[in-house]
Image (tube, rainbow, N blue to C red; front, side, top):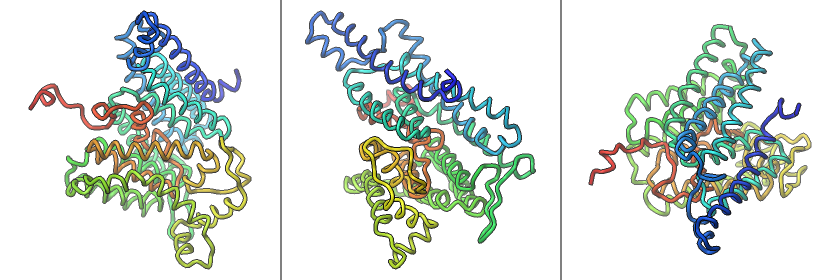
Length: 440
């Protein structure tokens, strides 16, 4: 009980996992009962999407689903963008208590959404549940809370109109950034100042690179809200200003480079959208998760100070190749991940997840993102594709790819694990009005 009160995620994950399995069993029994035959029951359970634990109170349960997701997303956004700042040094007891309450609330909201307010077919559960089981198994070995939260959010995002939680999280995140950074500038909130070379200011957060990740996350949410095809000159000015600030303020190299990539991608999506159309281009972009993993592994494995190219890259990545090379000499990947990295420092997400998550989870994650990119590009969702690619690039230096409050494109993986068809594949685009949808 004490463990649950202090860290509820472990029990919440198990409740969701076992609840989905039990709910699937109940749905299967009801399908057989309604069909009147074994073959009919199999067809009904496999193909029809039904609420778990029976179809009682279908309207209020389905209506509550999107609201539960919005509540969970907004709470996590506030807890991370505000509560995870150095405000905790000002009000340690209050912020700690607030964080604990928030952890319980958003976890409960996600579990309720998964078990009581989502419809599933047997086919969808046959894919999603084993993925959930494997990643839960890995979580119990490596205790990577942020990764597990990403898994819970993507599972709970099923059939949620994602534009509403996107706008809520953008508002909460932007307001939290403004309050923390203003408080740090006025001296109300502590900040971290690093000297040596260019000065770096964390503006109220625990590390400059964390602020860089938050700035990239806020920019991605803004772009997904505005849409590439609707961006105006002032949107590009704003993105450029955020990029310059990320470089001159916290001096977060990963955040700055990926903000610049996001800006370049949005320019291409706005003015040259046809370049994303050819199948060869879509295939290359969809292969980026595996290409990034392969490049990461090779760079760290082949690194020596005598190699001019790799030593130059090591400098650009601020010593990460050297650290990753040392980790490769020290560690052995385990099939289901590991928490003890024996003091190794790995700031490359692809190599880090290979050791902390293990080969099976790595394959699942990169295959999931590759399939996501392929489906997004196939459906013309260039905005989401560019944003996802920006965070995949961010993984070369930072670990925030699966943070669901920073990289909202994680939510779109619901379309992958539930095998959602093209016409229903999730996106952040506005839902067409009735008049627009009826137009020829």
